[in-house]
Amino acid sequence: RAFNTDKAGQINRAEIFMLLRLDIQDERWLSAMVAIRDAMRVVGSKTYVRCYRRESREGAWQPVTIDLAKA
Figure 1 (cartoon, one colour):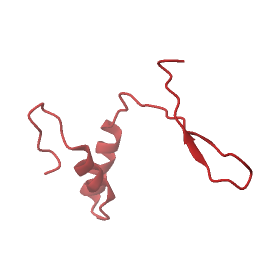
Figure 2: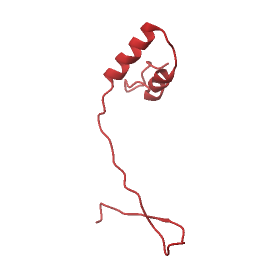
Figure 3: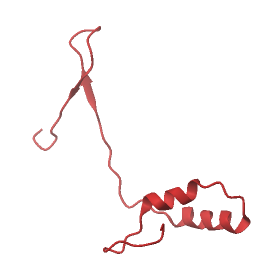
Figure 4: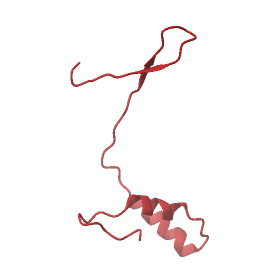
């Protein structure tokens, strides 16, 4: 399952991460998991900033939506 590809030829990352979480103490398995970890590359990432405000010190925090495209 983990190495089956979709129509675009991509593997299911969630299934690969499931393999990495398995606790199998076989030397060949551990070596394979090291190889998988070594083969992983981060292609891109996103950074999110969430802002909150409140009317008073006792008030509930309310999310503030910031549209950076319009800023």
